[in-house]
Length: 221
Image (cartoon, rainbow, N blue to C red; front, side, top):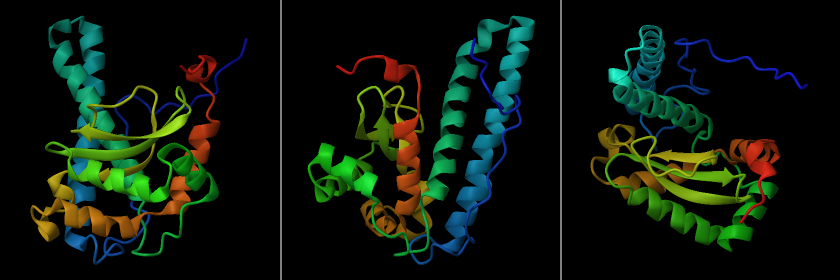
C-alpha cells in the first residue's frame, strides 16, 4: 500500500507570500502604490478570510450546525481561489521587458493547440478585456484533455474547468489597475504583457504536464 507523503497547510494557517521583487519593480506598468495595496491589503484579506472560513467549517462540523453550510462553502471557494490565483500572479510577473521569451515547451503546446503564438495572444488579450465584471484571464493545462486552454474566471472561482492547472494568470479586478489606468482595462492588459515572466510560465507548465493524478488514468475524449 502506497503511503502519501503530504505536508498539508494546517487548518486556518495559510500565510501571505512575500513578493519576489520590490514594490516598485513593475514600474511603470504597475505603480508602486497599486502593487502595495493589491498585495498587502487585498491579497491579505483573502488569506485572512480563507483562514477564518476553514476555522468556521471546523466549528460547523464539531457542532453539526449545517444551517450555515452554504455561506461557508462560498467563503472557502471565493477566498481559497483568490489566494491561489494571486500567489501565481505575483510569480509570473517580472520587471518590464525582462521576462524573456516563451520556452520551448510553452511555445510548442501553444502553437499545437492555438495554431500560432499570435493567435493565442490575441485570444488571451480579448478574453481578459471582456471578463464580465471582476475576474481573471487564465491560461491553464488540463490533464484530462491533455492540452492548454484559455478561460475567463468571474470573481476568482466561476467558469473554470475542473482539474485545470493555471500557468499564466492576469488579474482584471479593478483594484489591480484602476489607480493608473482608471476604466481603461485594455490599456492595462496590453501594458501588462510586458511583465510576463516566461521562464516561470515554462516551469509551471512542465510541472503541470508531468503531474500524475487520477485524471491521467481516464482516457481523453
